[in-house]
Length: 401
Ligand code: HEC
Ligand code: HEC
Image 1: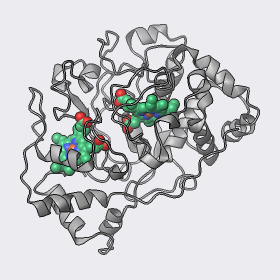
Image 2: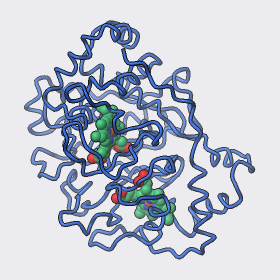
Image 3: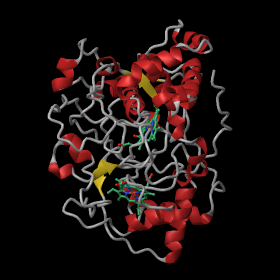
């Protein structure tokens, strides 16, 4: 398994949930304006290893939950609380899925079955969106691999997104969220998505009040949080708990790796060799999540008039311009189109682009090389990627109270 590269760089978001409330610093829009408020986050020691091989405390010590920086800090009413360490979610709530192991969650928001259930309802509830007409689920559909099947989609406020909607599979195993990694906790990400994607912005308190008015929610909040109080923070936390339950593992490929040699076709088995051998895809799409948790410039969109700076806008380092997070390839088959701008229509298009060594631009990552595969090798490679699609338990849409 490849090492996780945790970059200790500033993010725009005031990452602490409490400190973010009422602070406009955590913006959903990718920051193409200069983030004058960003300052480098404290270095947090060595890189974190995978949850399967590292104790929760070791991970916790390597994770900077972050503190609001610059203007965000001074604008926040309360000082940032100490970052909550990550702990493993109990096996009774989310059984570890091999080979990913247990899901980690901050110790102040460890999912219970009740919080997950509440988050599921909230994810589908349009009351959260602008004018009560837009839900998280308006863009993250269960039957589209929790993405939306579009290259780019429209937000709740009618503005177009400049980046493609990603899948929600295994977001609980990520270390940083968004294509540029600007959100350092899932809770902060959820709050930003609520304000930005749902087109709510400053009207957030109205949306919370709309939820709080619904009697049917009271028992759900009580079950999840111990009492009936309905707050912004609790809604964000329940949504994050629900997201941590959306996983993809135990695919045919995983069963093959675990010893069931019949679980995948011979073609897919050869494709695994191509993937980690000749085509060197595993250098970035490293198992078990098939990502290196890092950012790379493949040149996608570099020929546009005003290219998306991606990671560079977050780190304010020109060397990071055009870099985007390596997406996981687990169940990638379920959520075409691909890439941060949705420019690859099919899996074949995406794979051919990668095999082509990316698009020339001054920042092209040296990890991309043009790779000549025979027709048979290409088709094996595709068969392998398809074998990463895991069968999902039947999903029952929630009843909205
Ligand atoms: C209008 C469509 C839309 C809606 C509605 C929407 N999202 Fe998203 N979501 C996106 C887009 C686009 C991105 C990627 C943005 C970026 O990277 O800059 C994203 C990214 C995410 C991510 C990060 C995934 C990753 O791998 O980094 C999570 C988690 C997420 N959304 C959860 C939510 C939640 C929770 C809600 C409801 C509060 C929501 N989304 C509503 C379009 C949407
Ligand atoms: C140098 C690192 C690197 C290498 C090598 C690499 N990839 Fe990628 N891959 C990425 C990054 C980063 C993205 C997202 C790029 C973007 O959207 O700008 C990506 C995107 C993808 C996607 C689209 C996933 C999605 O959800 O949008 C697929 C499929 C893919 N790669 C397959 C492959 C295959 C197959 C190989 C080997 C031929 C390969 N990659 C080699 C880093 C890499």
